[in-house]
Image (tube, rainbow, N blue to C red; front, side, top):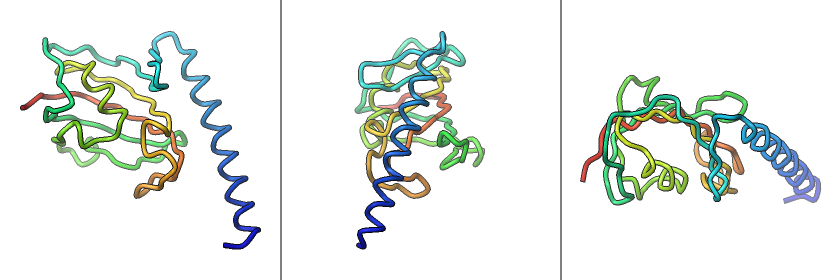
Length: 143
């Protein structure tokens, strides 16, 4: 790779890092936002009706809408109009940390720092070192 290309990539990475830091700092100031020790931020949009939270070994059925900080949608079960079922321990670290705090019926907005998402690797429509924003509704828990 050329020296020019390397310099461009470093400049782009520095710009994204600064944007991420500013976005996370601003969002953390909202009164309704909880910030976990690992940097994940969440906001309860609707409280659920369940009594039990899933463990990372459980299957979960969810509805979610994932965007980047610029509003671009990278994935959405909501847009597909079909819930999704996943084994929780197969998902990004942020979901493994946050979903066990939820109960069925909870709808939360998650702001995921890159270190708790895909980090420095690009994943489909998600550029490297991206903050991920999810509106996430936990529908059901299965074993």
